Figure 1 (cartoon, helix red, strand yellow):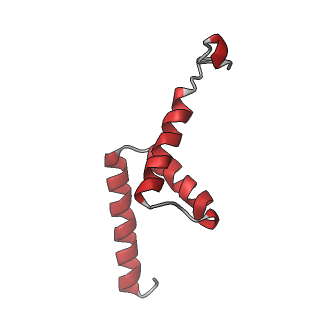
Figure 2 (cartoon, helix red, strand yellow):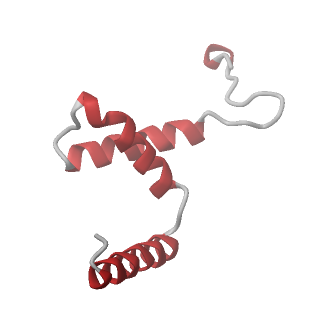
Length: 79
């Protein structure tokens, strides 16, 4: 893409707005955490990708499932 020629998508209709939106999302999350250590950035990025690709209902259901699994393991003495 050549933005100087007013190109904003390629021939297959892939727009630059998607990645710009994702990076904006990542920067907002980093600001809330007052930055991220370099050693944790890759994991932080993967978590952001995971969260970005889910809606709030999916996130809530996944968190409940993970919490329930953790509680079950605690009760069995496995955690």
